[in-house]
Length: 174
Image (cartoon, rainbow, N blue to C red):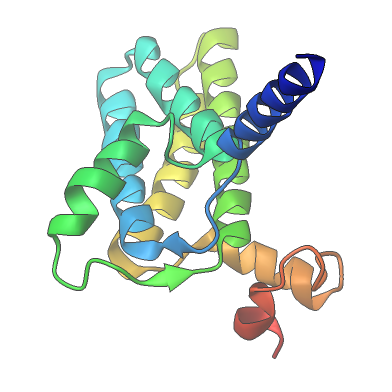
C-alpha cells in the first residue's frame, strides 16, 4: 500500500507542476485576442477611473504568467471562443517570449494599480496604463510584440540562451 500512496503523490505533484506551465508553442492568434482584451480593459480604466478594474487586469497578467491561459478568463475566451472562430485561426510561435511579455504586463499593471492607489493624481497611473495599452495595441492590431522584441535582444546578447528557449533559435538567432 505505501508504494501506491507514493505513486499517487508523485502523480499529483506532476499534475500540479504541469498546471503551472506556459504553453510552448503559443497560438499567436489567441495571444493577439488576449492583447485586444487588455486594450479594452486599459481604455475602460483610463476613461472611467474605476480602480476596481485593476483587479481583473492584474489578475489576468499574473494568471497568464503563472499558467498560460488555463486560469485566465481572457485567456480562455481567446483560446476557446475567439481564435478558433477566426480565419487562419492558428499561427504557432515560441512560448517563452510570450511568457516574458506577460511578465512585463504584470509589472506594468501592478505599477499602474499602485500609482492609482498611492497618489492623489490619476496622471501617473494613466501614463503607465497608456504605455501598457500601446504595447497591447501593437500586439493586437499589428502582431508586433514589444515584450518578444525585448526577449529577442536578451537572446542576442546571450542573456537568454539556447537551453532557456530552444525554439527561439529559429526566431532570434540572426
